[in-house]
Amino acid sequence: MPSVVGLLEERELTARRRVDSLREEADRVQAELVVAEREWNEWVIARSRVGEVLSPGEGDAAGSDGAEEPSDRGGPLVPPASSEAAKPKSVVPMWRAGLVWSALSADYQRIVQALADRNRLGQGPLTCQEMAACFGLDPAPAKIEALRSKAKRLTARGWLAEPMPGRFTLAKNVAGPDAGS
Image 1 (tube, rainbow, N blue to C red):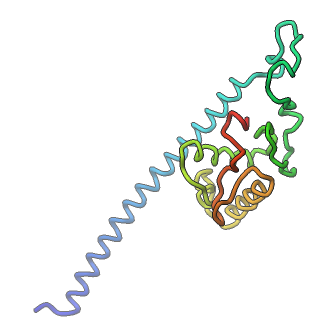
Image 2 (image 1 turned 90 degrees about the vertical axis):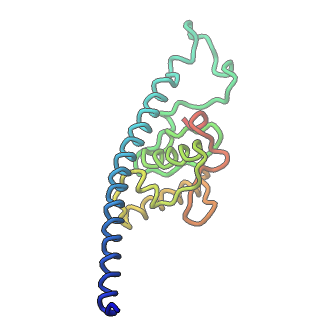
Image 3 (image 1 turned 60 degrees about the vertical axis):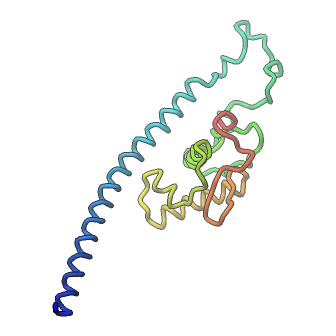
């Protein structure tokens, strides 16, 4: 009959091997995650750039003779994005129909874009910790709290909704890129 200490050592060795195996797997998954997040960020930037290129410029809306009036376009009158663009450290404007995402500073745009992507893919709300991981930020409490503050501010101004405490998604009226950019 084996000794109790021998059985414990055998089980400890088995548990240690399992822990080592799981740590190796976690390291492999973490490395894949870093690569996938980098690739995802590159696609987000590429889509943003394509949107900028394909969006009509200020001079493109008028006809070649420049006689077309804004009311002839059939859509709501929206001032050029540059007149509404937020300055760094500025207040987040209240969301209203026709307000473009460029009215937000870059950090706020990044949050709205990430949630729009999740919405478009049919995925659920994001926590601030998940947002930090998406953006490649260090998961330090200060970084997460900064994101939470921005998300709460966007929620208070009507850009985001918080269906569950600490989980954020786009507000119902804030549609995808066609309406926001």
